[in-house]
Length: 538
Image (tube, rainbow, N blue to C red; front, side, top):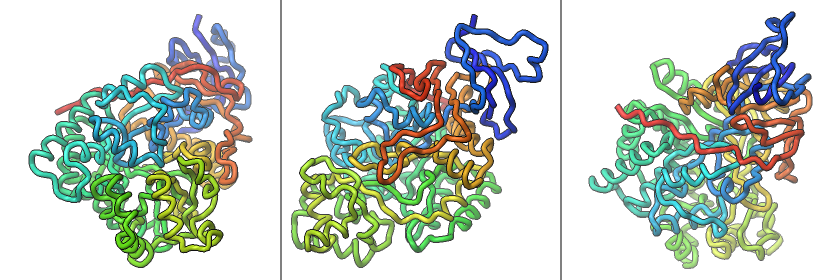
Protein backbone atom coordinates (compact mmCIF):
# COMPACT_ATOMS: atom_id res chain seq x y z
CA UNK A 1 0.00 0.00 0.00
CA UNK A 2 1.29 3.46 -0.91
CA UNK A 3 2.29 6.06 1.67
CA UNK A 4 -0.29 8.78 1.02
CA UNK A 5 -3.31 9.65 -1.06
CA UNK A 6 -4.37 13.29 -1.29
CA UNK A 7 -8.07 13.01 -1.99
CA UNK A 8 -10.42 15.35 -3.88
CA UNK A 9 -7.83 18.06 -4.53
CA UNK A 10 -8.26 20.80 -7.12
CA UNK A 11 -5.03 20.17 -8.98
CA UNK A 12 -3.30 23.18 -10.53
CA UNK A 13 -0.49 21.20 -12.05
CA UNK A 14 1.99 23.98 -12.86
CA UNK A 15 1.64 23.78 -16.64
CA UNK A 16 -0.78 26.70 -16.91
CA UNK A 17 -3.59 24.35 -17.97
CA UNK A 18 -7.02 24.54 -16.31
CA UNK A 19 -7.35 22.88 -12.92
CA UNK A 20 -8.95 19.48 -12.47
CA UNK A 21 -10.21 17.45 -9.51
CA UNK A 22 -8.24 14.34 -8.64
CA UNK A 23 -6.80 11.96 -6.09
CA UNK A 24 -2.99 12.12 -6.04
CA UNK A 25 -1.03 9.18 -4.67
CA UNK A 26 2.46 9.60 -3.20
CA UNK A 27 4.92 6.84 -2.37
CA UNK A 28 8.63 6.84 -1.56
CA UNK A 29 8.92 10.58 -2.18
CA UNK A 30 7.32 10.62 -5.63
CA UNK A 31 3.92 10.99 -7.25
CA UNK A 32 2.99 7.49 -8.33
CA UNK A 33 -0.52 8.03 -9.70
CA UNK A 34 -3.07 10.72 -10.43
CA UNK A 35 -6.66 9.58 -10.67
CA UNK A 36 -8.89 12.28 -12.10
CA UNK A 37 -12.46 12.53 -10.86
CA UNK A 38 -14.01 11.50 -14.17
CA UNK A 39 -11.76 8.43 -14.43
CA UNK A 40 -12.59 7.39 -10.89
CA UNK A 41 -16.35 7.23 -11.45
CA UNK A 42 -17.55 3.71 -10.82
CA UNK A 43 -14.06 2.49 -9.94
CA UNK A 44 -12.42 1.73 -6.66
CA UNK A 45 -10.59 4.83 -5.47
CA UNK A 46 -6.91 4.59 -4.59
CA UNK A 47 -6.02 3.73 -1.02
CA UNK A 48 -2.93 4.41 1.05
CA UNK A 49 -1.55 4.18 4.56
CA UNK A 50 -2.65 7.78 5.07
CA UNK A 51 -5.51 9.61 3.38
CA UNK A 52 -5.66 13.40 3.37
CA UNK A 53 -8.97 15.08 2.58
CA UNK A 54 -8.14 18.06 0.34
CA UNK A 55 -11.71 19.20 -0.30
CA UNK A 56 -11.63 22.92 -1.09
CA UNK A 57 -7.85 23.05 -1.38
CA UNK A 58 -5.63 23.58 -4.42
CA UNK A 59 -2.80 21.11 -4.89
CA UNK A 60 0.15 22.54 -6.80
CA UNK A 61 3.84 21.82 -7.23
CA UNK A 62 6.07 23.30 -4.57
CA UNK A 63 7.13 26.88 -5.18
CA UNK A 64 10.68 27.58 -6.35
CA UNK A 65 12.33 30.70 -4.99
CA UNK A 66 14.63 31.72 -7.82
CA UNK A 67 16.42 34.38 -5.76
CA UNK A 68 17.07 33.51 -2.11
CA UNK A 69 19.59 34.65 0.48
CA UNK A 70 19.25 31.69 2.85
CA UNK A 71 22.86 30.56 2.40
CA UNK A 72 23.49 30.55 6.17
CA UNK A 73 19.88 30.63 7.38
CA UNK A 74 19.31 27.07 6.19
CA UNK A 75 22.20 25.94 8.39
CA UNK A 76 21.43 28.23 11.31
CA UNK A 77 17.67 27.67 11.59
CA UNK A 78 16.44 24.10 11.11
CA UNK A 79 12.84 25.33 11.35
CA UNK A 80 13.15 27.83 8.46
CA UNK A 81 9.42 28.56 8.52
CA UNK A 82 10.13 31.80 6.70
CA UNK A 83 10.21 29.77 3.50
CA UNK A 84 8.63 26.42 4.37
CA UNK A 85 5.39 28.06 5.52
CA UNK A 86 5.12 29.89 2.17
CA UNK A 87 5.12 26.61 0.26
CA UNK A 88 8.69 27.08 -0.94
CA UNK A 89 10.21 23.66 -1.58
CA UNK A 90 13.38 24.80 -3.39
CA UNK A 91 15.55 27.89 -3.01
CA UNK A 92 18.34 29.06 -5.33
CA UNK A 93 21.28 30.35 -3.28
CA UNK A 94 24.61 31.99 -4.12
CA UNK A 95 22.96 35.13 -5.43
CA UNK A 96 24.27 38.56 -6.43
CA UNK A 97 27.83 37.40 -6.89
CA UNK A 98 28.69 36.95 -3.20
CA UNK A 99 28.45 33.81 -1.10
CA UNK A 100 30.56 31.38 0.88
CA UNK A 101 31.99 28.97 -1.73
CA UNK A 102 34.44 28.59 -3.34
CA UNK A 103 36.73 30.25 -0.80
CA UNK A 104 40.00 29.96 1.03
CA UNK A 105 40.52 31.13 4.59
CA UNK A 106 41.31 34.71 3.55
CA UNK A 107 38.40 35.06 1.15
CA UNK A 108 35.94 33.47 3.56
CA UNK A 109 36.76 36.05 6.23
CA UNK A 110 36.40 38.87 3.69
CA UNK A 111 33.10 37.63 2.32
CA UNK A 112 31.67 37.09 5.79
CA UNK A 113 32.42 40.73 6.56
CA UNK A 114 31.18 42.03 3.19
CA UNK A 115 27.73 40.42 3.38
CA UNK A 116 27.13 40.45 7.11
CA UNK A 117 24.16 42.68 6.35
CA UNK A 118 22.59 39.85 4.35
CA UNK A 119 23.32 36.88 6.59
CA UNK A 120 24.92 38.08 9.82
CA UNK A 121 28.58 37.50 10.60
CA UNK A 122 28.08 33.74 10.85
CA UNK A 123 29.76 33.39 14.24
CA UNK A 124 27.24 30.64 15.03
CA UNK A 125 28.14 28.63 11.92
CA UNK A 126 30.86 25.99 11.59
CA UNK A 127 32.33 26.88 8.21
CA UNK A 128 33.65 23.38 7.59
CA UNK A 129 33.64 23.73 3.81
CA UNK A 130 35.66 25.62 1.22
CA UNK A 131 34.55 24.28 -2.17
CA UNK A 132 31.12 24.38 -3.80
CA UNK A 133 30.84 20.61 -3.52
CA UNK A 134 31.65 20.69 0.19
CA UNK A 135 29.00 23.35 0.79
CA UNK A 136 26.40 21.24 -1.05
CA UNK A 137 27.49 18.23 1.02
CA UNK A 138 26.87 20.30 4.14
CA UNK A 139 23.33 21.03 2.93
CA UNK A 140 22.82 17.32 2.33
CA UNK A 141 23.11 16.64 6.05
CA UNK A 142 19.51 17.84 6.31
CA UNK A 143 17.82 21.20 5.74
CA UNK A 144 14.25 22.45 5.86
CA UNK A 145 13.78 22.91 2.09
CA UNK A 146 15.73 21.91 -0.99
CA UNK A 147 18.47 24.24 -2.24
CA UNK A 148 20.39 24.79 -5.46
CA UNK A 149 23.52 26.93 -5.74
CA UNK A 150 24.88 29.52 -8.14
CA UNK A 151 28.64 30.09 -8.20
CA UNK A 152 29.14 33.71 -7.05
CA UNK A 153 31.35 35.57 -9.52
CA UNK A 154 32.38 38.23 -7.00
CA UNK A 155 33.62 35.56 -4.59
CA UNK A 156 35.48 33.85 -7.45
CA UNK A 157 37.10 37.17 -8.35
CA UNK A 158 38.04 37.84 -4.73
CA UNK A 159 39.71 34.43 -4.61
CA UNK A 160 41.62 34.75 -7.90
CA UNK A 161 42.22 38.52 -8.18
CA UNK A 162 41.40 40.18 -4.86
CA UNK A 163 39.28 43.27 -4.21
CA UNK A 164 41.16 45.67 -6.47
CA UNK A 165 39.56 47.65 -9.29
CA UNK A 166 41.59 46.38 -12.20
CA UNK A 167 41.42 43.98 -15.10
CA UNK A 168 42.28 40.37 -14.42
CA UNK A 169 45.56 39.08 -15.84
CA UNK A 170 45.40 36.16 -18.27
CA UNK A 171 46.57 33.86 -15.48
CA UNK A 172 43.87 35.17 -13.12
CA UNK A 173 41.19 34.77 -15.76
CA UNK A 174 42.33 31.20 -16.35
CA UNK A 175 42.04 30.56 -12.61
CA UNK A 176 38.53 32.02 -12.53
CA UNK A 177 37.48 29.84 -15.43
CA UNK A 178 38.83 26.83 -13.54
CA UNK A 179 36.95 27.76 -10.37
CA UNK A 180 33.69 28.16 -12.27
CA UNK A 181 34.17 24.85 -14.07
CA UNK A 182 34.96 23.08 -10.80
CA UNK A 183 31.84 24.50 -9.14
CA UNK A 184 29.66 23.39 -12.02
CA UNK A 185 31.21 19.92 -11.99
CA UNK A 186 30.42 19.74 -8.28
CA UNK A 187 26.74 20.50 -8.85
CA UNK A 188 26.15 24.25 -9.12
CA UNK A 189 23.38 25.27 -11.51
CA UNK A 190 25.03 28.40 -12.91
CA UNK A 191 26.86 31.64 -12.16
CA UNK A 192 25.64 34.79 -10.43
CA UNK A 193 27.06 38.31 -10.45
CA UNK A 194 26.54 41.41 -8.36
CA UNK A 195 27.63 44.16 -10.72
CA UNK A 196 26.88 46.95 -8.28
CA UNK A 197 28.76 45.11 -5.50
CA UNK A 198 32.51 44.87 -5.06
CA UNK A 199 34.58 43.08 -6.20
CA UNK A 200 32.30 41.63 -8.88
CA UNK A 201 31.55 45.05 -10.34
CA UNK A 202 35.22 45.48 -11.29
CA UNK A 203 34.91 42.81 -13.99
CA UNK A 204 34.71 44.07 -17.56
CA UNK A 205 32.32 42.53 -20.06
CA UNK A 206 35.08 40.53 -21.75
CA UNK A 207 35.90 38.82 -18.45
CA UNK A 208 32.25 38.03 -17.76
CA UNK A 209 31.80 36.70 -21.28
CA UNK A 210 34.64 34.24 -20.80
CA UNK A 211 33.12 32.95 -17.57
CA UNK A 212 29.71 32.65 -19.27
CA UNK A 213 31.27 30.49 -21.98
CA UNK A 214 32.25 28.03 -19.27
CA UNK A 215 28.76 28.16 -17.79
CA UNK A 216 27.18 27.48 -21.18
CA UNK A 217 29.45 24.49 -21.79
CA UNK A 218 28.13 22.85 -18.63
CA UNK A 219 24.47 23.55 -19.33
CA UNK A 220 24.15 26.24 -16.66
CA UNK A 221 22.79 29.77 -16.76
CA UNK A 222 24.03 33.25 -15.89
CA UNK A 223 22.10 35.22 -13.25
CA UNK A 224 23.37 38.81 -13.05
CA UNK A 225 22.40 41.56 -10.68
CA UNK A 226 23.37 43.94 -13.46
CA UNK A 227 25.16 47.28 -13.34
CA UNK A 228 22.22 49.59 -12.74
CA UNK A 229 18.58 49.42 -11.72
CA UNK A 230 18.28 53.21 -11.78
CA UNK A 231 19.90 55.63 -14.22
CA UNK A 232 21.05 53.54 -17.16
CA UNK A 233 18.89 50.53 -16.23
CA UNK A 234 17.81 49.75 -19.78
CA UNK A 235 21.39 50.01 -21.00
CA UNK A 236 22.44 47.65 -18.22
CA UNK A 237 19.79 45.10 -19.22
CA UNK A 238 20.86 45.36 -22.86
CA UNK A 239 24.49 44.83 -21.82
CA UNK A 240 23.60 41.52 -20.18
CA UNK A 241 21.56 40.38 -23.18
CA UNK A 242 24.41 41.19 -25.57
CA UNK A 243 27.04 39.58 -23.35
CA UNK A 244 25.20 36.28 -22.93
CA UNK A 245 24.30 36.06 -26.59
CA UNK A 246 27.99 36.45 -27.41
CA UNK A 247 28.76 33.60 -24.99
CA UNK A 248 25.74 31.53 -26.14
CA UNK A 249 24.73 31.29 -22.48
CA UNK A 250 21.18 31.26 -21.07
CA UNK A 251 20.34 34.45 -19.15
CA UNK A 252 18.21 34.82 -16.04
CA UNK A 253 17.78 38.42 -14.92
CA UNK A 254 17.82 38.73 -11.14
CA UNK A 255 15.09 40.80 -9.43
CA UNK A 256 14.26 42.42 -12.78
CA UNK A 257 12.79 45.68 -11.56
CA UNK A 258 12.64 49.22 -12.93
CA UNK A 259 13.21 51.35 -9.84
CA UNK A 260 13.85 54.99 -8.95
CA UNK A 261 12.02 58.03 -10.27
CA UNK A 262 13.84 57.97 -13.60
CA UNK A 263 12.19 54.65 -14.47
CA UNK A 264 8.59 55.21 -13.43
CA UNK A 265 6.30 53.70 -16.06
CA UNK A 266 9.18 52.31 -18.14
CA UNK A 267 8.62 48.58 -17.64
CA UNK A 268 7.18 48.20 -21.17
CA UNK A 269 10.50 49.42 -22.57
CA UNK A 270 12.33 46.66 -20.71
CA UNK A 271 9.89 44.01 -21.91
CA UNK A 272 10.14 45.28 -25.49
CA UNK A 273 13.92 44.89 -25.31
CA UNK A 274 13.55 41.34 -24.01
CA UNK A 275 10.85 40.41 -26.54
CA UNK A 276 13.10 41.51 -29.38
CA UNK A 277 15.95 39.35 -28.07
CA UNK A 278 13.63 36.38 -27.47
CA UNK A 279 12.27 36.65 -31.00
CA UNK A 280 15.86 36.54 -32.27
CA UNK A 281 16.50 33.28 -30.41
CA UNK A 282 17.87 34.39 -27.05
CA UNK A 283 17.24 32.17 -24.00
CA UNK A 284 16.06 34.61 -21.31
CA UNK A 285 14.06 34.39 -18.10
CA UNK A 286 13.72 36.74 -15.13
CA UNK A 287 12.46 36.85 -11.57
CA UNK A 288 10.76 39.52 -9.49
CA UNK A 289 9.33 40.01 -6.01
CA UNK A 290 5.77 41.40 -5.69
CA UNK A 291 6.65 44.53 -3.69
CA UNK A 292 7.98 48.00 -4.50
CA UNK A 293 10.85 48.61 -2.01
CA UNK A 294 14.23 47.00 -2.51
CA UNK A 295 16.50 45.57 0.17
CA UNK A 296 20.27 45.43 0.50
CA UNK A 297 23.02 46.76 2.76
CA UNK A 298 23.84 50.37 3.55
CA UNK A 299 27.45 49.77 2.48
CA UNK A 300 26.21 48.77 -0.97
CA UNK A 301 25.19 52.39 -1.57
CA UNK A 302 28.81 53.58 -1.44
CA UNK A 303 30.70 54.37 -4.65
CA UNK A 304 32.78 51.45 -5.86
CA UNK A 305 36.06 53.23 -5.29
CA UNK A 306 35.19 53.55 -1.60
CA UNK A 307 34.93 49.75 -1.31
CA UNK A 308 38.04 48.92 -3.32
CA UNK A 309 40.43 46.69 -1.42
CA UNK A 310 37.75 45.04 0.68
CA UNK A 311 35.87 45.76 3.90
CA UNK A 312 38.84 46.94 6.00
CA UNK A 313 39.88 49.39 3.29
CA UNK A 314 36.32 50.73 3.11
CA UNK A 315 36.23 51.27 6.87
CA UNK A 316 39.54 53.12 6.72
CA UNK A 317 38.18 55.49 4.06
CA UNK A 318 35.03 56.12 6.08
CA UNK A 319 37.19 56.97 9.11
CA UNK A 320 39.08 59.64 7.20
CA UNK A 321 37.22 62.98 7.22
CA UNK A 322 38.40 64.18 3.82
CA UNK A 323 37.64 60.86 2.11
CA UNK A 324 34.30 60.67 3.89
CA UNK A 325 33.39 64.04 2.42
CA UNK A 326 34.24 62.76 -1.07
CA UNK A 327 31.96 59.77 -0.47
CA UNK A 328 29.13 62.05 0.66
CA UNK A 329 29.51 64.20 -2.46
CA UNK A 330 29.34 61.16 -4.73
CA UNK A 331 26.29 59.87 -2.91
CA UNK A 332 24.30 63.07 -2.63
CA UNK A 333 25.39 65.18 -5.61
CA UNK A 334 26.66 62.87 -8.35
CA UNK A 335 24.87 59.58 -7.77
CA UNK A 336 27.22 56.73 -6.93
CA UNK A 337 27.42 53.54 -8.94
CA UNK A 338 26.50 51.72 -5.72
CA UNK A 339 23.21 53.65 -5.73
CA UNK A 340 22.62 52.90 -9.42
CA UNK A 341 23.76 56.31 -10.66
CA UNK A 342 20.98 58.18 -8.83
CA UNK A 343 21.67 60.75 -6.07
CA UNK A 344 20.68 59.14 -2.81
CA UNK A 345 17.48 60.23 -1.10
CA UNK A 346 17.94 59.59 2.60
CA UNK A 347 14.21 59.63 3.27
CA UNK A 348 13.93 56.42 1.20
CA UNK A 349 16.66 54.56 3.13
CA UNK A 350 15.15 52.67 6.09
CA UNK A 351 17.47 50.75 8.41
CA UNK A 352 16.14 47.20 8.67
CA UNK A 353 18.84 45.48 10.69
CA UNK A 354 22.08 45.95 12.63
CA UNK A 355 24.42 43.48 14.29
CA UNK A 356 25.32 45.74 17.25
CA UNK A 357 22.41 45.84 19.69
CA UNK A 358 23.51 49.30 20.85
CA UNK A 359 22.30 50.60 17.46
CA UNK A 360 18.84 49.01 17.67
CA UNK A 361 17.04 52.37 17.93
CA UNK A 362 17.96 53.11 14.32
CA UNK A 363 16.03 50.09 13.04
CA UNK A 364 12.66 50.85 11.46
CA UNK A 365 13.54 54.48 10.81
CA UNK A 366 14.87 56.20 7.73
CA UNK A 367 18.32 57.71 7.87
CA UNK A 368 16.75 61.14 7.45
CA UNK A 369 14.41 60.59 10.42
CA UNK A 370 17.25 59.49 12.70
CA UNK A 371 19.45 62.37 11.55
CA UNK A 372 16.71 64.87 12.31
CA UNK A 373 16.30 63.46 15.82
CA UNK A 374 20.05 63.55 16.37
CA UNK A 375 20.39 67.08 15.00
CA UNK A 376 22.91 66.14 12.33
CA UNK A 377 23.11 65.63 8.58
CA UNK A 378 21.91 62.34 7.09
CA UNK A 379 25.43 61.47 5.93
CA UNK A 380 26.77 61.95 9.45
CA UNK A 381 24.18 59.46 10.69
CA UNK A 382 24.85 57.01 7.86
CA UNK A 383 28.61 57.25 8.39
CA UNK A 384 28.17 56.61 12.11
CA UNK A 385 26.13 53.49 11.41
CA UNK A 386 28.60 52.14 8.87
CA UNK A 387 31.54 52.60 11.22
CA UNK A 388 29.84 51.53 14.43
CA UNK A 389 28.34 48.38 12.88
CA UNK A 390 31.37 47.75 10.64
CA UNK A 391 29.46 47.90 7.32
CA UNK A 392 26.77 45.48 8.53
CA UNK A 393 23.53 47.57 8.56
CA UNK A 394 20.87 46.30 6.19
CA UNK A 395 18.31 48.58 4.60
CA UNK A 396 15.01 48.84 2.78
CA UNK A 397 15.11 51.27 -0.13
CA UNK A 398 11.68 52.68 -0.98
CA UNK A 399 12.17 53.49 -4.67
CA UNK A 400 9.87 51.14 -6.64
CA UNK A 401 6.75 51.69 -8.75
CA UNK A 402 3.67 49.49 -8.54
CA UNK A 403 2.75 49.74 -12.22
CA UNK A 404 6.22 48.44 -13.14
CA UNK A 405 5.83 45.52 -10.70
CA UNK A 406 2.48 44.50 -12.21
CA UNK A 407 3.61 44.89 -15.82
CA UNK A 408 6.72 42.75 -15.44
CA UNK A 409 5.00 39.93 -13.52
CA UNK A 410 2.62 39.35 -16.44
CA UNK A 411 5.42 38.52 -18.88
CA UNK A 412 5.58 34.86 -19.96
CA UNK A 413 9.27 34.42 -19.00
CA UNK A 414 8.66 35.76 -15.50
CA UNK A 415 9.33 33.63 -12.40
CA UNK A 416 9.03 34.35 -8.68
CA UNK A 417 11.91 35.21 -6.38
CA UNK A 418 11.78 36.60 -2.87
CA UNK A 419 15.26 38.20 -2.73
CA UNK A 420 14.54 37.72 0.96
CA UNK A 421 17.14 38.81 3.49
CA UNK A 422 16.25 36.97 6.69
CA UNK A 423 18.81 38.76 8.87
CA UNK A 424 17.93 41.84 10.90
CA UNK A 425 15.26 42.94 13.34
CA UNK A 426 12.93 44.31 10.68
CA UNK A 427 13.57 42.59 7.35
CA UNK A 428 11.65 43.15 4.15
CA UNK A 429 8.28 41.32 4.36
CA UNK A 430 9.03 39.64 1.04
CA UNK A 431 11.31 37.22 2.94
CA UNK A 432 8.25 35.73 4.67
CA UNK A 433 5.46 36.61 2.23
CA UNK A 434 6.42 36.63 -1.45
CA UNK A 435 4.61 33.51 -2.66
CA UNK A 436 1.32 33.83 -0.75
CA UNK A 437 1.35 37.53 -1.68
CA UNK A 438 1.35 36.58 -5.34
CA UNK A 439 -1.55 34.16 -4.81
CA UNK A 440 -3.62 36.25 -2.43
CA UNK A 441 -3.08 39.85 -3.47
CA UNK A 442 -2.20 39.70 -7.16
CA UNK A 443 -4.32 36.69 -8.17
CA UNK A 444 -7.39 36.69 -5.90
CA UNK A 445 -7.72 40.38 -5.01
CA UNK A 446 -6.44 42.15 -8.13
CA UNK A 447 -6.78 39.54 -10.87
CA UNK A 448 -3.42 40.50 -12.36
CA UNK A 449 -2.78 36.85 -13.27
CA UNK A 450 -5.12 33.83 -13.46
CA UNK A 451 -4.37 31.30 -10.75
CA UNK A 452 -3.15 28.62 -13.14
CA UNK A 453 -0.82 31.06 -14.88
CA UNK A 454 0.59 32.40 -11.62
CA UNK A 455 1.30 28.91 -10.33
CA UNK A 456 3.19 28.15 -13.56
CA UNK A 457 5.34 31.25 -12.92
CA UNK A 458 6.21 29.91 -9.47
CA UNK A 459 6.77 26.24 -10.34
CA UNK A 460 7.29 24.81 -13.83
CA UNK A 461 8.97 27.86 -15.35
CA UNK A 462 11.70 28.08 -12.74
CA UNK A 463 12.11 24.29 -12.86
CA UNK A 464 12.63 24.54 -16.62
CA UNK A 465 15.25 27.25 -16.16
CA UNK A 466 17.03 25.02 -13.63
CA UNK A 467 16.68 22.07 -16.05
CA UNK A 468 15.14 19.87 -13.39
CA UNK A 469 13.46 16.94 -15.15
CA UNK A 470 11.27 15.79 -12.25
CA UNK A 471 10.15 18.95 -10.44
CA UNK A 472 7.80 21.83 -11.11
CA UNK A 473 4.75 19.86 -12.25
CA UNK A 474 2.16 17.55 -10.71
CA UNK A 475 2.96 14.53 -12.85
CA UNK A 476 3.33 10.82 -12.26
CA UNK A 477 6.97 10.02 -11.56
CA UNK A 478 7.78 13.53 -10.39
CA UNK A 479 9.13 14.26 -6.92
CA UNK A 480 6.43 14.89 -4.36
CA UNK A 481 7.35 18.51 -3.64
CA UNK A 482 3.77 19.71 -3.19
CA UNK A 483 1.73 22.53 -1.68
CA UNK A 484 -1.92 22.50 -0.58
CA UNK A 485 -3.42 25.96 -0.19
CA UNK A 486 -6.86 27.50 0.15
CA UNK A 487 -7.36 29.91 -2.78
CA UNK A 488 -10.02 31.80 -0.80
CA UNK A 489 -7.77 32.64 2.15
CA UNK A 490 -4.13 32.32 1.12
CA UNK A 491 -2.32 35.54 1.97
CA UNK A 492 0.96 36.90 3.22
CA UNK A 493 0.90 37.52 6.95
CA UNK A 494 4.07 39.60 6.83
CA UNK A 495 3.83 43.38 6.64
CA UNK A 496 6.37 46.18 6.82
CA UNK A 497 5.32 46.71 10.43
CA UNK A 498 5.38 42.97 11.32
CA UNK A 499 7.65 41.38 8.71
CA UNK A 500 8.06 37.98 10.40
CA UNK A 501 4.38 37.00 10.54
CA UNK A 502 3.74 33.72 8.75
CA UNK A 503 1.24 33.38 5.90
CA UNK A 504 -2.31 32.07 6.13
CA UNK A 505 -4.15 29.57 3.95
CA UNK A 506 -1.27 27.10 3.37
CA UNK A 507 -2.05 24.11 5.63
CA UNK A 508 0.19 21.48 3.99
CA UNK A 509 3.61 21.44 2.35
CA UNK A 510 5.44 18.27 1.33
CA UNK A 511 9.09 17.99 0.35
CA UNK A 512 10.27 14.70 -1.10
CA UNK A 513 6.96 13.23 0.06
CA UNK A 514 7.38 14.26 3.70
CA UNK A 515 5.23 16.83 5.48
CA UNK A 516 7.22 19.88 6.50
CA UNK A 517 4.00 21.87 7.12
CA UNK A 518 1.05 19.90 8.51
CA UNK A 519 -2.23 21.42 9.65
CA UNK A 520 -0.56 24.82 9.27
CA UNK A 521 2.31 24.01 11.63
CA UNK A 522 5.97 23.25 11.01
CA UNK A 523 6.89 19.63 11.65
CA UNK A 524 10.35 18.51 12.71
CA UNK A 525 11.16 17.07 9.27
CA UNK A 526 14.41 18.13 7.59
CA UNK A 527 13.37 16.83 4.20
CA UNK A 528 15.42 19.21 2.06
CA UNK A 529 18.66 18.37 0.28
CA UNK A 530 21.05 20.00 -2.15
CA UNK A 531 19.74 19.90 -5.71
CA UNK A 532 22.68 19.37 -8.03
CA UNK A 533 22.70 19.58 -11.78
CA UNK A 534 24.58 16.77 -13.46
CA UNK A 535 27.51 18.11 -15.54
CA UNK A 536 26.75 18.50 -19.22
CA UNK A 537 30.12 19.58 -20.55
CA UNK A 538 30.22 19.57 -24.34
